[in-house]
Image (spheres, rainbow, N blue to C red):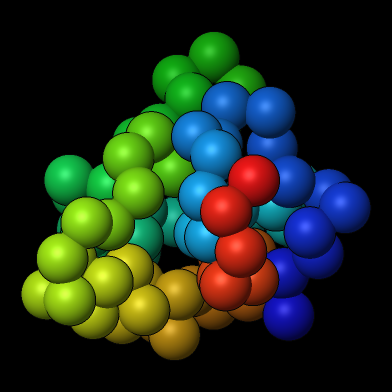
Amino acid sequence: MADKDAKLTENVPGPFYVDDQCIDCDACRETAPDFFRRNDDRGYSFVYRQPETPADRELCLEAMEGCPVEAIGEDGAED
C-alpha cells in the first residue's frame, strides 16, 4: 500500500500519487500515459496530471492496481 507521507515531490496535487517505493517498471506509464510520467534523472514515475472524468479515474485505478510494488496511492482527498 502506498504511503501518503512518502509521496514524491513531483506529484501534482490531488487524490492520486506515487510514493518513494516506485521501481520504475513502466507499468503505470503504459496503462495511463496521460497521467503518469517518468523522472529520467532519478528513474521513477510520478503523477503529472490528475484524472478529470470517470474514464480517466478508471485508468488511474487500473494503473494503481497493476503496480507491482503498490507505490501508487489514491487517498480520495484533494491536497
